[in-house]
Image (cartoon, rainbow, N blue to C red; front, side, top):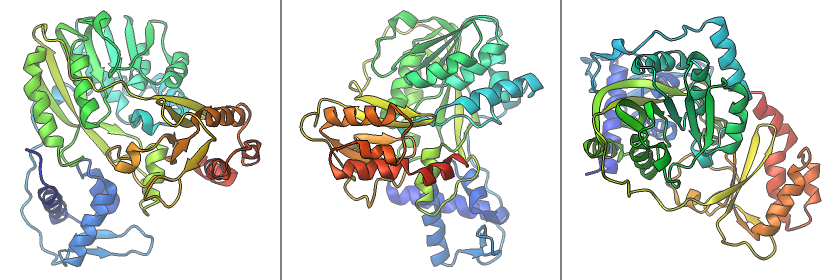
Length: 440
């Protein structure tokens, strides 16, 4: 049974107090130790604790104050149960140790990436974790068999330079794959692949090691786990990054259900590596929380890496995939991307763009895909702009004209349709804002 909202909030209260019992923390340091607690929810909880006089905030004058227990007392440290950890050291290290060549390859890959898209739930790994991830992959693949990467194209591209055998990289994002093509070794094969929609029979039992970095939504998390398990050959290994316990109230139940289903998929859990994956702050996430007054300057989002051994082939065909996802038409300029949903709805008529219900403007206030606002979005940008779009056939023609040349505020005037479209384009293409965002 999922945790209730009250239980969930109570657990986060206790977690914060436990951290502050050890030493004072800034908001950023609490966030980094927050087991993936939503930054806005963490801030609201801290304010509740201040109101109840349990926590005190000392203002040092630079906007980065320190939180501490209001009574100044310290309590015994409570060790949190984060999963098996005794064998962690056996899997860490032995990566390229950030040699000059490794650093140049990584810098080249990360600097070429398009802006991460909320449509694809994209969070790139932070640059500090690639070394240990590649070291881990080398240890998991002592037999030297083929390796597959699902939803982790940047890692696969980098790994291909340190491996002499075939590396297969699967991703739904065509633009990302086209970019990564210039950064892979010759042995790498890049495959446009929608795990939630495409039959995976051709890849059944193909790989000795499969590394999976799935979207963390409830339905896709299970789909990626089930589908990727079929890619692994008997005796092979599956490594998958899963969300931590404060990601949402239901996540503990979801992780337990995945573990229960593992045996039916022929998998046996070998080890859990807590806090092993870490993610950079994508631009859409930075903008979302900045709107709420939270400046995410450093990586804070982490995942627990679950490693399974494939002990047998499963005769059960995966049947829990979600319905075919909507097709999103993409428009881009440099690294900026705009997505228009094409799901056969609101295609005809004059084009029109409206803010989503409950939003003051076109900037989305968070990154969650579980809100009613997000579910109604049919126009989304890589900078967290969202809208409801009508007359999408002609709207697509309008966007095609604007983005066929360098899109600017003035080029938005070439769209001779509804005033709201111009307003939306002015909002997302404002030259001053664009320069500020790109200077981050």
